[in-house]
Length: 150
Length: 295
Image (cartoon, rainbow over all chains, first blue to last red; front, side, top):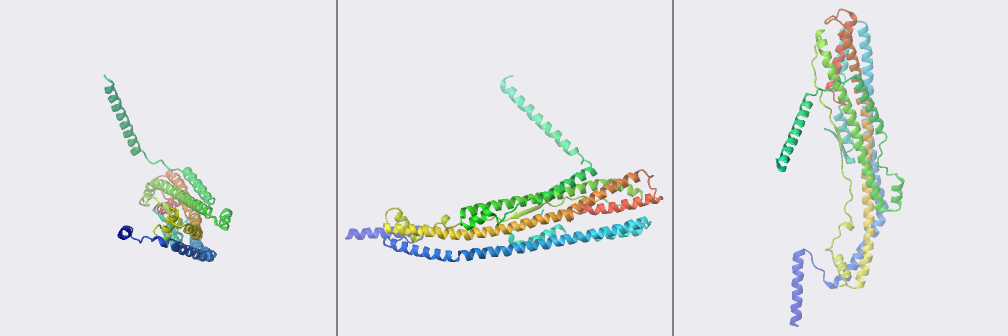
């Protein structure tokens, strides 16, 4: 009897030392079946829930990124349209001013022609490339990409 | 002379030879002057710019509607989906990198044109001073290089990769596997493991869908960048370059005409017109020298 108590005490002490060393409780032998059934039930419940919501979750993720892609596409269209508008305005201004300058030079009006020319050069004030890239980065923040000029 | 002395002499001679060779090439680099840039060189660079522009349209990006990917999704083949997504991510990054390279080549061509303009403006200025027109020189500063950063797309660790061996269920499974537990426990744990594998697959599908979305958003942004680079080249770099070429030709022609006229003679109406035109061309040239590629 004493011997049995001694063994039990030794086992208990060993279990305690194991718990102290690993930080979690060691499972008593008799609980094997119980924990196995609980684990199976838990897994079955989780699986059922996951299968039930799988299609819906995949659709939600798809829709989220569809919205993001549409937003990115719209941001680019805006930047491109602004650049094309700047270009058309500059080209038209340049063509008209040069035409006027050529007419003035042909008429010998050199000083007025020079003044026109000076105004033409001063009027080029389109956004810098850095500003366009900043606009691009702001519009596509959710894409995980970033451009920079160094 | 013994063999070791011969060896030392050979080594010393070789070292001297390489030092002298290195020294002379350094002198050659320092003494080298930048080669004069001609109108022909500029036209050749323009050709390279248009080639870079046409190459941009052939770049390929990730396509979520790809038949193989759609089929893999239908069959829920997680391994195949992951493989196709990773291939799509690699394709995106490579095409995006190529687009950046094309832009930087086009910007470098503009800088080359600005250098050429700087050279010819240097020739025009002394002549303008003779005619009473004073212009100061500007230095060409190189344009910035376009670079891109994209976040790394990766799957989070899933069940199979982060098993927790400290749970009671895992302990029971361990005992059953080691033969110290009952067969009923082993059977139940086997079924539980199958259920866990199915759970893991379902979770993995969600993660793969997230990954696909991220790659798709990235592809959209990268394709947008390619279109934007095309627009920048078409509406900014090429017009800037063409302007440089036009001025270069105009200044070259004015220099030839005015060079043959007696210095300071502006009485003749045609000469006066040439001086005014050259003055305007120099002013435009100065503006282009200080304008970096794309601005």
